[in-house]
Image (cartoon, rainbow, N blue to C red; front, side, top):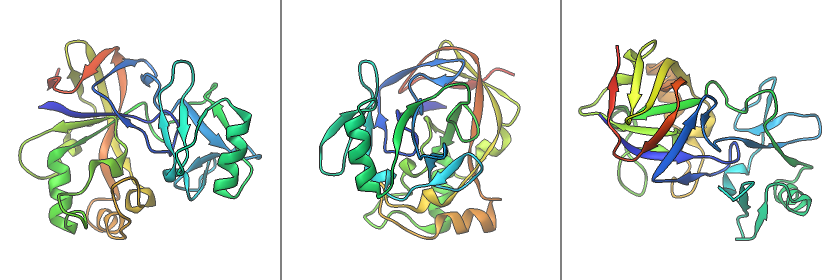
Length: 235
């Protein structure tokens, strides 16, 4: 198995960036989901409503890029603001139609379920077989699942289902402990970047795969992960 793609999302629930390599520390991928959009009552912008999160339609129209000190947010019209710029907060709020600020993580992590997320090419092929590929051609776009690491695994099926509790070495240094499958929400069907909106993926996972896709893991040993890094079980 190898790392086929690496993604980082500097601002939670916004579009992120495909990168050649990342550093991984005990918190997870460095710079990933370190910032979030917050409404006046303290809930964070997300694709779903929970005790901590509030669904904010429109967040996937913004692109977050890593910056020297703070992320840079690109608006749908191409304008860019530093994440700590109050003027940018106002403009983002105007686009979303609500009052918001952008905040850095403090004591509580911004992750939905865990520090590092992984999906496999085998699972993408299985889901494509269940639902069909993207309207514009090709299999189901991995972007929809907002995973940090896309792992190249031969065949088709859901191999990650058997990874829970196991240790994964990713590259020469990083060791992850897989916790459990990731529960999915409506965000996987939403239009984002080149992936058009659809309404069948979450339904299919709910009916045939307990509404899960991919897994999340904790970090047992930090280091660097790059595209092409080997992925192997350590136990």
